[in-house]
Length: 195
Image (cartoon, rainbow, N blue to C red; front, side, top):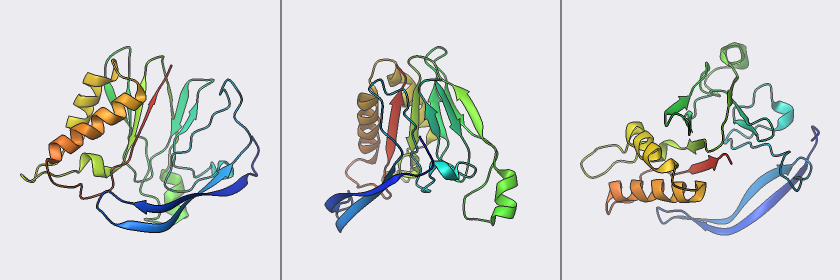
């Protein structure tokens, strides 16, 4: 895949948020860099809210998943660290590397602090990309759902569930924790399971 891509817009129409508000004529902007092969060996994942494109890789903060090599490259720029659930050991690890929040300082200070790290992935490993609306969800007792609860629940469930089932189970557990109250923030969760 090269450095130039094909831009597009995916219309969502009137997009309704969980809080009840709506965004009329919502669209998702995207850029396509080549075509996905039948065996999906050329998949590169950029789940980044920072709009990093492959030609910007020297500052991209979204993780890069390489299924052919079974690696995940990541950097820290103020977002929640990705969680890696290791199927061999049963451990849950936050993938943290050196860095600071994107946009907090100029590139002269930001660039030297950024460190890209790589992790090898094994069959059955699971990755969780989540917004702080998951871990900071607060119930009527002013208790947060919290990172520890997310890690514990994900570790208990990951080995017996597909990525979609695990995503749905985590979101259901957060809703159960909140009780009748709506979430106070967006709740974004992407779950990837290595085959």
